[in-house]
Amino acid sequence: MLRISFINVGYGDSILVEELHGSRRTFSMLVDGGPPYAGTYCASYDLRPARMPAFRYLQSHGIQSLDVLFLSHFHIDHVGGMPAVMKACACGQVWSNYRLPDPACLEDLNRVRIESRTAAEMRLSLNLLAEMQRMAEADGKEIEVLGEQQKTIVLTGQLQADFFAIDPALAGRTEKLAQAALNTADTAKAQRALVHLDGIQNAAGVALRLRYEGVRILLPADLPHSYWRSYLKEPDSLRADLLKIAHHGQADSMTEELAAAIRPRHAIVSVSSDNPLGAPAPEVFAMFDPEVHLWATENIEVQPYFPRAEPHRAVSFGIFPDGTIVAAPELL
Image (tube, rainbow, N blue to C red; front, top):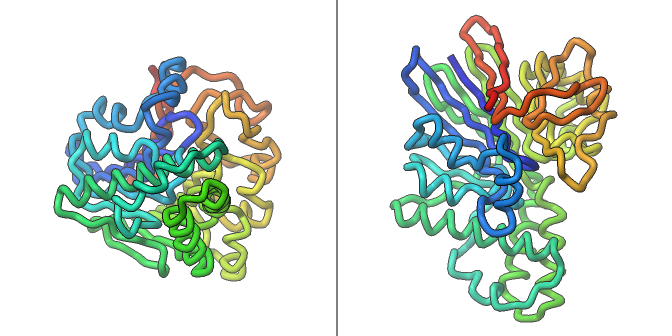
């Protein structure tokens, strides 16, 4: 059986993938780490008991090691919890959409006075990515960059992962903006580079599709619907039985044409009831066939799609070899 748990980390993504043979866990992968449990971010978790930092969720399930840790992109709500996970769990392989040339290169940027909140969050994200790299290097590993080309990786005998390619122009832009931020002592230039870097990170993320015994699971990170335009020309290329709706269900995540191409049986959105961005957008859910089962990582109320529900720590999907998918919220 394959179990995929979408952890309630508030506004962010953290997805645990486990292959189980009976009660024995034979493979585990964490996709993204949610926001950090540190500083001002702690209140987001502490004031809402159903939310749980990724590292704590893993601990509560007795997970002390991961075969793979994968970062789709380095926005704070994805990279934030990754260093804490690496401290709590031994990690076999670490993958990301980007790797800093040198984790020590942030020293100059950290001395620059940053006033923009967006720029400050992006600087923190780069520091968290650098921390990931230092921890991987201390363990004798190097973070492997994915997304330079479409790639399939065999994870187990029954589980394969397809990683989609980043637009080369966006990958180059990420590198250029990161270097611009890292190599200037000018506050205005550093802020401008960080804000622009923040602005392209969703589109520069790496989407992942898992295939298990004929069942397909599409995890598109925060990619905008425009990314998939070329794939819509290929019938069935995006078909998935389980879909994580991109970008927390914001309006740029979906079109009716894309929803019709994916045709999921189940779709889940990673959300928080207190986010200031108006996510999720109700019109996104209206694009799916009425027979699609809709789920949310937090007990949001969006009528008629999400009635009031009990608080839950995660939504877990059990995927069986015969193609059956069983979903259940993990209640407190």
